[in-house]
Amino acid sequence: MENLMDKIVSLAKRRGFIFPSSEIYGGFSSCYDYGPIGVELKNNIKKEWWKTMVHDREDIVGLDSSILMSPKIWYASGHLTAGFADPLVECKKCKKRFRADHIKEQAATKCPECGGELSEARKFNLMMKTFVGPVENDASVTYLRAETCQGIYVNFKNVLDSMRPKIPFGIAQIGKAFRNEITPGNFTYRMREFEQMEQQFFIKPGENKKYFEEWKKIRMQWYIDLGINKEKLKFHEHAKEDLAHYAKAAFDIEYDFPFENKELEGIHDRGDWDLSNHAKASKQDLSYFDTKENKKFVPNIIETSAGADRAALAFLVDAYHEEKVKDDTRIVLKFHPKLAPIKIAVLPLAKNKKEITDVARKIFNDLKTKFVAMYDDSGSIGKLYRRQDEIGTPFCVTIDFDSLEDKKVTVRDRDTMEQERVEIDGLKDYFEKKLG
Ligand code: GAP
Image (tube, rainbow, N blue to C red; front, side):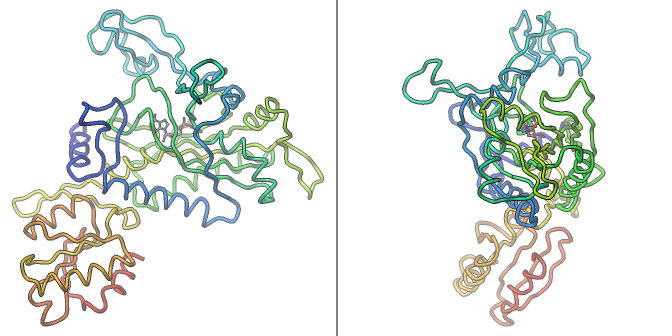
């Protein structure tokens, strides 16, 4: 299904979802920009994540920590010492670099590009280095965060002291992360700058298995509830030798992308690795006092770590449908209404007739107070419908000459293409029921 990926990349650019970064300068490897429609999709994904992970729960609070942090954090976390590195091999002939584990997966022994001989694998650290302040020396070195969760661990005590949560409880945040990936690729699947939606659940040691299983179920269900075809989702358990340096156990939620079954989100049992190491390195007490049991302990952590970009890509791929309509092929994105970038399009049938555009503008102004709506009169109705289908708008409202007489409009359903006449005065209630 390589072809499907080409179609998605082309649609993403054509319809304003995702553009290559720095395109007018020839692009910038592995970075992408979300366009006017894509940013709505990604924001809706983040909004749904925040709602289910923070607002709907009594036991999870939010956080927004900085991207630049003390480099001491990355030594204590193990990212600069224990193994946040991928095995790198270089082709002796064309000098291209590859991840040795990816080459092994492809059962290749020579350079996949030119067939040249490959070097021995060496460890390549993925942290992105930068300098803070005007002087570039060892003392000013720091790193762009490689995972957002470290900002959560170093604020554990602040949250404990200010919010007084009782264990078990979670801290959640959404934000950018950076990794100097050796081989980024597959569109937005593997980038060097990306966004994570991470939640750390602090628990009593010994209760790891129970909460690990609970979080696996909750996170899998989140994708299903937002409309992803559940046949395309599965768990993948990490073998002991493949575990990240911080993890005692890990399961990925995988999606069947057109290029491969690949990780969408990781659920990790991090034990007390993070809090113990930060307590040791910072010489701060990062333990929790359980008043019920009159006991102090270092909490263990069950982490749920999702990629906002990977989720957006999976929702985009999953929503993509091609349907035969008479002699034509209709491309339609069947997003869950909660994720659809635009909920309602208002389309006047005659853009030169003021009586019609006046009514259409009035309807649009009214609907946009409640729903994300778009006004479009820039083409024939066939073209306008095609555009809305390709960005996944659940409903189109058309205003025609009859609307001036009967005070009704035509509402077209994206998925069934069925149309019904609805009273203009009742439109808001109608969509309230349909879209919630
Ligand atoms: N805090 C744990 C952690 O960062 P991870 O499995 O390395 O775990 C979690 O990353 C999620 O972040 C992944 O499942 C993926 O969705 C996203 N992610 C990681 N690297 C990425 C990259 N290079 N490009 C896009 N998303 C990435």
